[in-house]
Length: 178
Image: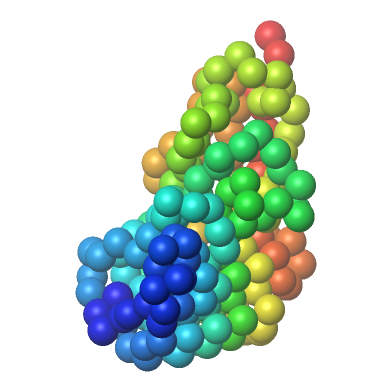
């Protein structure tokens, strides 16, 4: 983000961030890490997990315009309590608009040091749900343009599924057995 900084060296060393900036990001930039973004924000570019998985929390109003979020799984687990521990997640405490007509929000999948769905690992033989985003405030608007990338595998498919007014899940459904 243009003009962003980490608020302490401890946060930077742990792989986290605490950005205190109100404005917009440079288009095409990469934001890596987890922690809090304080202040109204406009994000355009790529969001990735840093060296450590965590939850990236936007404390104020946010707009994602032409933004790609790389969801990263580091352990074969799908318990809601492990969001931000075994996979990265997003949290929005203020009003959020993710994507707009012709200017989307894309979710892409990354499997880090774990078997992917096309492996023969038994984990992928049943349906799974991962908490992808939590919305603490209304209103929020989400125009997800995925699957643009890698949501379809030989052994199953992923989709983003809203649940009620405050959560969105990434859902995996295995392909029917032949």
